[in-house]
Length: 273
Image 1 (cartoon, rainbow, N blue to C red):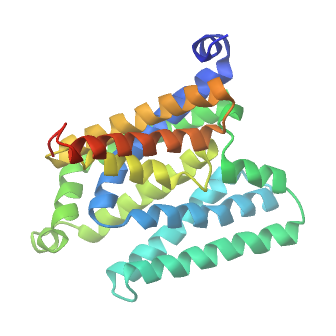
Image 2 (cartoon, rainbow, N blue to C red):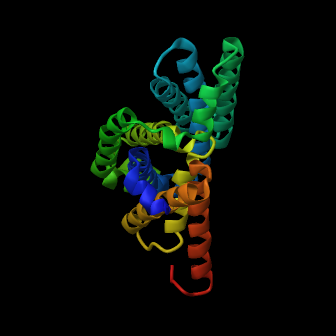
């Protein structure tokens, strides 16, 4: 039986495809402004901070992703405040918040003395354990986040390329930055359920980097990044089913392979930048 036959036959694979595809589209859109603003590592930082939220949720008996969302947004806002106010440079603020957040998660796990199996599912992803409830909760949130991104497109574009000019023109740069940070943190938390906290930031960075190899405008870069993310999710899932691979890792490897292919094509003149 081929991977295609299995996807047709089993609902959990269909749910996995829907969930990962939708999250790849969302991450692809948000990844472009992050990469252009040289904030790629912030995605990895958010993923590490969300580890503390997941651990706290499991320890306190809350829905882990809900707790992770709250903790991640708080950590993300702290990073943005330190960066924007000049308290610390962006990479230093990131290092501090990531270290504290991850250490908090480690301490909570040691206090609990258990649930390592449950936590492992969030660290490495459990895409094939996605339920209808997960998907039904995720779809309206993901669609809402995409809608908010589309609504703020012009403002995000302006701030991405000329933050100081946007501020002088009267745009609420601080508010826009906070919204982008919250969007990114929310995407990290939602996607971590399927790809895993250790790999989820790759969905933000690699498709965006692929798009920027060939796109000639911000809008085209976002579209290409979303397509690259979706194709990576699709190919990665089929490879995972066909060869019994870890789905999160297969998706990221597919994204990396696509980047190498596009970058190589540009390098050798097959496509023009």
